Image (cartoon, rainbow, N blue to C red; front, side):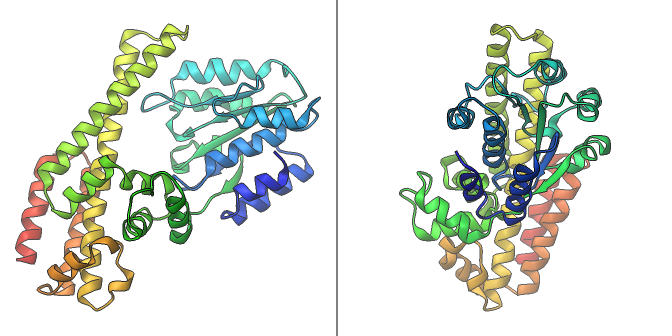
Length: 360
């Protein structure tokens, strides 16, 4: 691993590339906040940057970088904190970051702590982390990754150097998908559609090409609100079960976990995934109406759902573009209302009833 390899991992993130290259040249700061949308490459950049930091001053820099790049990494001075449920548990942050940061490096002269999805830290965890951010040992470097930096306390964000990541261009997402396993067996039009619908989120594009994402997309296009709810419920149940299993494994490995903690955290993970899937489904519905408006206006080339142009053209032939745009607005309004904890079933039923009346 060399700085040039770090630069290549940031090929489509010029601002982050400049910032991190300059940091390595002048000496990295004690804390960074990698902020930007999901799927923009923050995780890969953090691993590459951490590898460069750990290689500095190591007896064998190349070997230190190589081990730091492995996932999971066997390097003793790289601590990577993820969460199994909807939030980072307070004890995890205290034990694996705050208390561990006071110990000198096992090898070389640096220690790196990466907190993935930093916005998932509770306020208690963030407040506890403040002292480590304010007065870290000279050998400690912290990297916080966040897709929702507004959810972080201002006191946390202000103590980190921000590194901004932009959504990936659709053509970049298309190229990555075409060369990956997710794109295998998919038509070029399906890959283009997933890339455009993802809005630069590579992880989301991959999901849309999978079985679960494909079903969600089909149910959204069919405007089947009961199926959308069922999709969200199934995803939530799977997420809850996966979180419970991961938390039980951590408890068996010696981490403090009460039965109530495990149950509560697993339920939160399930609710979060359920909400995410339902919101994504509605966003896909809005994208379909947006495409209908574009096709009926003679602008089929800007449609997101490029693999279903024939279906779009058939529906658009009998639609007023203004009605399609209004339908998209109704969907976005419902997405906002769901944030207010209104009844999901009633909200979706009302939405699709209004859409049916609007579009005839």
